[in-house]
Image (cartoon, rainbow, N blue to C red; front, top):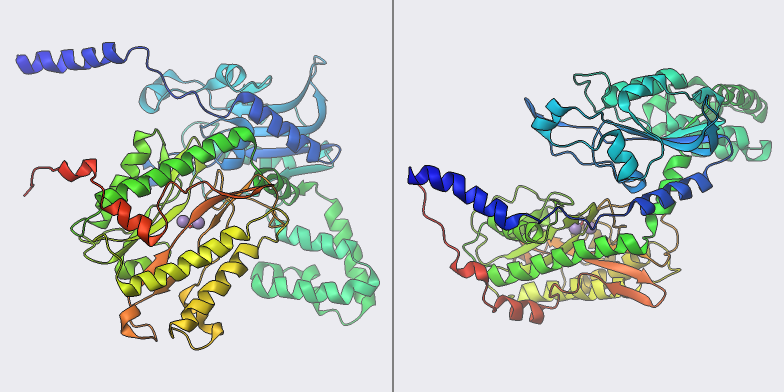
Amino acid sequence: MLRKILLFTVPLLIAVHLSGQGTPTDFLSADFHKERREAVRQMLPANSVAVFFANAERNRANDVDYIYHQDPDFYYLTGYKEPNAVLLVFSENQSDTSGATYNEMLYVQERDPRAEQWNGKRLGVEGAKEQLGFDRALNGGDFSNIPVDFKSFDMVTFFDFKNDFRDKRGGADLFDLIKTFKIKTDYPSDYNPTKKRLYSMIKSTDVENSANVAQTLGRYLSRDTSLKEDELLSGFVNAGDDGLRSDIKEKVSLKLETNNLDSQLIAEIMSKLRETKTKEEMVLLKKAVEISAVGQAEVMKAMHPNMSETEIQGVHEYVYKKYGAEYEGYPSIVGGGNNGCILHYIENNKTQVGNDLVLMDLGAEYHGYTADVTRTIPANGKFTPEQKQIYDIVYNAQEAGIKASVVGAPFRAPGEAASKVVTEGLLALGIIKDASEARTYFPHGTSHYLGLDVHDKGTYGPYKANTVITVEPGIYIPEGSDCDKKWWGIAVRIEDDILITDNGPVNLSDMAPRTTEAIEAMMKLPSPLDDFTLPTLD
Ligand code: GLY
Ligand code: MN
Ligand code: MN
């Protein structure tokens, strides 16, 4: 009886106590998304439409799907978090039969009380209007009657489909929306955006340049058999003279005119827009990074040699949840000793990290924005002389990389600066005999953009203010490497998230100790988890 009473009263008490506590409100604003759609519109050519589809739902096993995650471009432009949706952004106003004008449309999942009882509330058409600020929101089921003639546009730009979605029950899931789109646009069964781009190259080349273009195309064809099978492309590459190439150019031009589909411009537009962050985005991105940095610091306090990689991962992720971060931005990497040499090690299943270094590369995702922070620390709190020697090379390489992360510098600048330090360091320690061997131990790039995606979109041009990148050099010396045994099993990566500003780089993740001295000092501090014990289970 007492148990029954408790079962009923405890939730009630909690409910009463928590009444008035809501859900988070610090999401990107409807105005932000609207302004971003306007920016897309400004970059579209006349008489064109950009079409964006929501991300696919993906099956985990049987009747369980993976946790749904919106496509970052779709989220950036709408704020809509549900699947089975499509957004259209028109370059100019369109008119409907009543004479009303509109320049964008959003098709969303229809409200459905039964589905919502099982899987959660849907925003629906009204929510899309009220909360996301769309004038013209419709149910996905209406997409098949869309009052838009796609063939009347000079360009329909969209991301080509990856064909990794299923046809679920009902008539308005992503499968059905894409099917409708393909029918209405006369999407060719052999649509291939790369082929289209190569056709355009041929069309715009002049006679003097055509032999050079043929050479470039030859490289594309050698990497992609489907391109090689295209008679016009192969013909152009193998043509022995300009006359033959001119004939093919005419045929290619005719073919290009037969459809208005494009998948290049949309990619360029989204890369340009997402490369630099607005103030509103920076609030969320900074928060994701700071949460992740605090996670690293807390783990430094909690770490001991008996911990498993899985438990270490759990401590980071607990800190994320405590701050309200919904997800991890990518699968967490926690690798003790030799496991750290696997760059994207995600098994995280060593049961005791022992006295090794532990490489921890994790990022909280806060309201869509993800961090990407790596620290490498000695599980027992003290670096050995060998570990410290390698660590300090990576640290100095990262310092050089961060210093090179300035407005106007080429994208590769941090990487070049970091590689130089790593190469010199490995030579000085005798781990390599020649600079060309450095890539064996530092086999990855140093920087990538960061934002809604961990490897975010960008143009790879010279750095602009308000861009966020990672600077993440590493040295990895797997067991059995061709060097003195004392280095084997040492893997170090240090990764910070750097905001590029007109006043120089700002390290957003500097709340996580980074020098060997600061790490050792942090590891001496007590952790609230020191007293957290659980019963032993059989
Ligand atoms: N965590 C993936 C990366 O560092 O790029
Ligand atoms: Mn990274
Ligand atoms: Mn990383």
